[in-house]
Structure formats: structure tokens, C-alpha cells
Length: 125
Image (cartoon, rainbow, N blue to C red; front, side):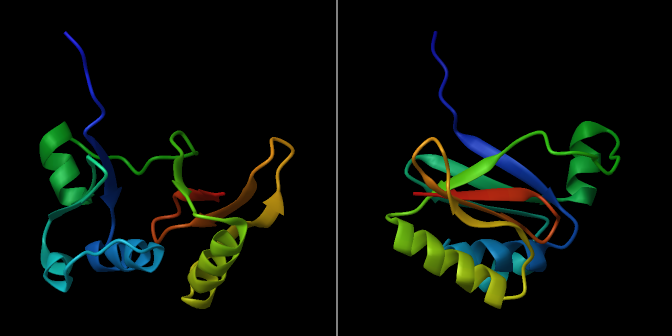
């Protein structure tokens, strides 16, 4: 019996704000999803899902605001220039930088931004 990663779920405070961030990243998410308690988008066979805190509470039985960085979402860009352009677009859209683009010692161009819920989102090329 094998397993396959099928979905990564993100609990969000405000669905529209969260989805707007991921739209800036390039995901095509219909505007109608802004009012839903659950939304998801598929890319290359894996789903990225978004649930409101109310849905999380109903699924888990309770909800406490998490503290600290535990999981990394990292998005591969086509090139260093594409990463730099996406980083600039994110910042110009009003989102917060965590680390500006830099050439990492392991050979990648790398940057880290925060989504609307404060999750650290890595970009690399």
C-alpha cells in the first residue's frame, strides 16, 4: 500500500484576503470562492485547500491560533528573474516581505514573503 500527497490545507482568518494573496502568486481561483468556507485549487496533481477557522474548528473539534513556523510552502519559479518579478509584484500588492531575494549558498535564488495570515511562503529558482 502506497501513499501520495494529495492536498495541503491552510486555515485562514479571511477567505478573500487569503485567496487574493494566492491569486497574486498566479493561482487561478474564481472570485466566487471568496465567500465560501472551503476553497481549493489543483496544480500538477496536488490540491492547495483553504478553510476558514470556523471550518477548522468543526473538523478538529476546537481551534487555537497557532504560534511559530512549522510548515514551509515553497513555490518554484521558472528563473531568478521570474522570482524577482514575482517578489516585486507581491510586495507592490501590499504583502509583507520576510526576506528579500538573495542568492543562497545552496545555489538557489530565494525569497520569503508572508501571506495574509502571516504564513512564511518561500519562492525559489
